[in-house]
Image 1: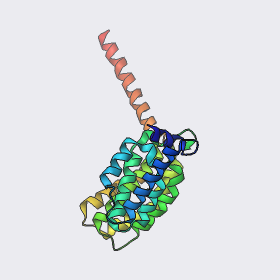
Image 2: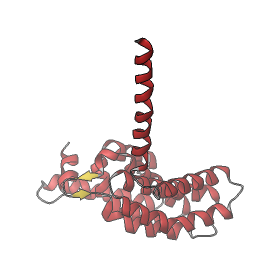
Image 3: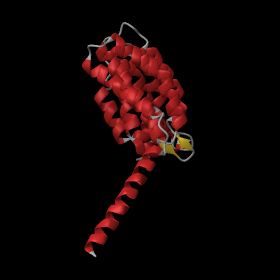
Image 4: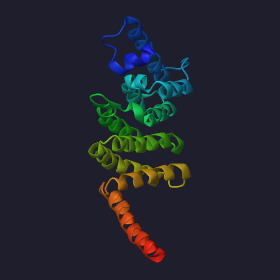
Length: 217
């Protein structure tokens, strides 16, 4: 609990033990992406992000850096998957002074562009970054950062389309690219469109109810 509190308010102002624990976590996460035979497993990182997302945001810069700087393509994909897990904890994205995601959105977008642009990567190594691209855009849109979501979608769209063209026979990858394209297209629709549709449904229901009442009379 103390570690989660330190993550919520930042290391400053908390005990040296909490700061030391966070420093140790950062060290192990950094080692996982950059060195061989690290004792920290990818599954454990996932569980930590699921259970303690505020701690996850404390190591978010390391995760973003690993998207472009991990020692191999597999670990770059692991970083993407870990960030997808973190973005999936929607309740932890909002903070008292705004969004925990927004400061990382631009660096993450650039890291994804670099990774997606590597032409020699196999389809299975490109699937995690494409999924992360969708997770980033969706999380920004859901946290009321629609402009940032649109900016990310526009920036990442050509790279995702190029990946789809290069690997047209990889079903899972093509499907993920299609989902990103659909998500990006949905951002172009005005936010009020769904509300108008619902309102129209209500208007149709009212005459039907009136007609039923008349028949009863």
